[in-house]
Length: 53
Image (cartoon, rainbow, N blue to C red; front, side):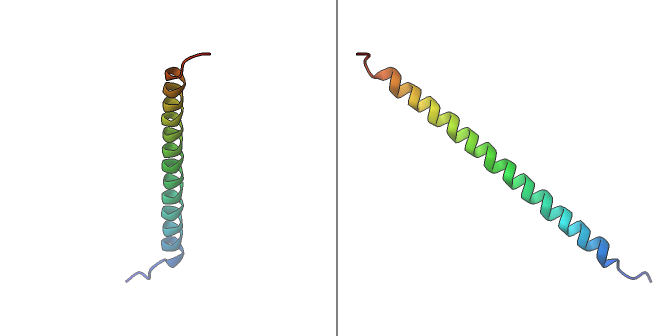
């Protein structure tokens, strides 16, 4: 029977953790960008509604 390779298992866990962290970071950046676009759109709408003086 083969003995388990703990180094390989640890490396796989670390890679999975790093990948998950990277995906989370990308998701947060996308949400932030989307919120910023929405904020700019509402700001433009509000500025269009104000009469020019």
